[in-house]
Amino acid sequence: MEEAEQLRALGQLVAVELPGGVPAWAATDLATAQRALGHEDLTKDPAFWPALAAGRIADDWELIALVRGAGMLHMDGADHRRLRQLVSSGFARAPIEALRPRIEQTAEELLDRLAATSSAGSPVDLREHFAFPLPVTVICHVLGVPDSAVGELRSRFDRLVTPQKGATGDDDIRVAVAAIYSSLSALIDWKRTDPGDDLTTALIQAGDDGDRLSEQELVETLFLVLIAGHETTINSITNTLHALLRHPVMLAAALGAEDGGTWANVVEEGLRYSPPVRHAILRYAVRDTEIAGVRVAKGDAVLASLVPAGRDPGRHEHPHAFDIARTTSREHVTFGFGAHYCLGARLAKLETEIALRALLRRYPDLTLASEPARLTSIPLQGYQSLPVHLHGGDGTPTGALSMDQDAAMTA
Image (cartoon, rainbow, N blue to C red; front, top):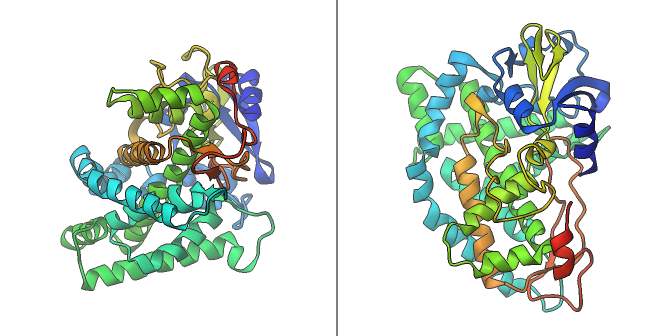
């Protein structure tokens, strides 16, 4: 969390440099992040970014997939409302709650598989074998993606969110984007001839019946729903689990709670304490404006830094402590703010809650096998793997804290 502290020390809105020497502004406290995410003078439309229009941003820039494409993610106004309305019904409270039995069944099946395949004393990577397959299975079910296509889509999406400098061939980010779009176009073609009770079919029918969605809009909307529907949830599960394992007092409180809302509080505190997204996607100033007393010139890029915003000392007492009883845990912008608040937030929270509760009730003595390496990603915050001992290790695992240490944990 060193980066978050450095940013906050510089002010509420600070000048930063993105990979490739690309300049931007970063909002570092909660109020300023909310202002940036919902500001009337900022847009997500990259057409208002002169650096991109003038060709100063290379086509293979490692963050280019977060700037171009993905439909409503980069729209505002009437166009954004139109596309969002088409998708929103699938992510309303009732249909998401209806997925609860499917999510619970998936979690139990994955845990059964872990029990059958893990060896006593050997660490298990929970990111690979539990946190990843659960949300991927669910979002593919929602969209009607066949099981045979899941592995390919996963590898391509991993390439987008963990870009490598100087990558070529299949690892080139442009190749990854093209391959994903090709797969989604094939899915649309299949659903046109073999429709089902899924979101892809619903979007196709809405477009065909009312001439409301072009082929490109269909592909871009599916792209957005797929990536938003699993990448952030993977990190939400692993980040919150890691926090619980590093704070055994909090873990014990969660496991011993009779209140059914406790696990929901665990999820919210995890989202505040260690959000799955480090920096929200860029906005661009459509005119000269002022944010937190700082002049932002027309065409400047602005992002919200979610880690320092979630640990804003002006909103949270002892903000660096992980406390599942915190009354301000929901005061974060992990899923955005305003018109672009994430449609999938309700699903991500439900999946994280079910996953953590099922895992830790089956394996209450779960311990870290080693301290995991973090993802090398600008947009996402998480771990490359999460090695654990399902039944506890021999002695204190690397990086684990004692009960006494837990009370003093501040980062």
